[in-house]
Image (cartoon, rainbow, N blue to C red; front, side, top):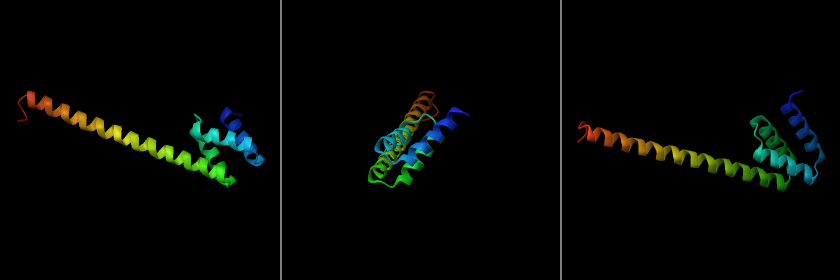
Amino acid sequence: MTTIRVKENALFVLSQSRSTEARDLIASTARSSSNPDVQLRAVRYLGAMRTPDSQQTLDDIYRFAVEQTAMSRGQFLELTIVLILVLELVLFFMGIMK
């Protein structure tokens, strides 16, 4: 049995517990697992719990993901603008662009 499979099975067992400690472990996995499949499984179990704490955790995870995506897009746009400006300078000094 692979390590990922063991982690997924452990998440299942934790999700059946409904204890605060189990929910906290699932939430921690949903926030920071290095494996996307395990992370997704943890998010699904949090959603199935339907407690105010699990809903808040899911909201936090969603907001963090949206924020990270916006920052990535902003950085990409900034890099694109810098590259265009550098290209314009090169073309200007080569005499191609006036």
